[in-house]
Each structure stands twice: as C-alpha cells, then as structure tokens.
Length: 94
Ligand SMILES: [Zn+2]
Image 1 (cartoon, protein in one colour):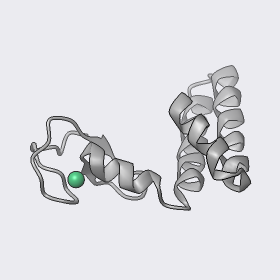
Image 2 (tube, helix red, strand yellow):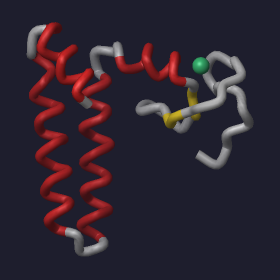
Image 3 (cartoon, helix red, strand yellow):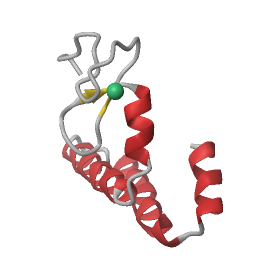
Image 4 (spheres, protein in one colour):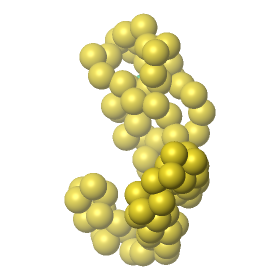
C-alpha cells in the first residue's frame, strides 16, 4: 500500500482512506471496494488471498495460525451458495 497518492487508482477520486483491491494491485477507495465486494467471484478471490496468507504463515512456522486462516478461507468458499440474506448478515458481522 505504499503506492497511495491520495487518489483512488480505480475511479480517480480523492480519498482519505484506501484499501488494496482483491483482484489486482490497485489501491482503491472505500466506495470502489464496496462495489468490488458485490462481484460474484469476490469471496473466491478472498479465499485465494487467505490461502496465500496461510502459506506465508506456514513459512514462518506459524502452523496453528495458518490452520485457522485456512478454516476461514474454506468458510468463505462455502458461502457462495448461501441465500443473499444470510450472506448480508455475515458481511455485516465481518
Ligand atoms: Zn474509487
């Protein structure tokens, strides 16, 4: 996130806060992130990202943490088929 210059890489608007895109290396504003979360493949991308993170943890010898992260990744992937209402609750909870 060190390439942030105060403007969203996606929409170009000035923004006080930013977050990394789940699909590429862009730093994006919160409204772009909100749109991104609506993508049907978002949870899969998030699960993939978490699995990579788990791999890095394992590389540091943090086996327990890696296993915990993998559980969350598996949950995310399984959520794809839940009814929209349930998914909204979980999104809110997170
Ligand atoms: Zn934006």
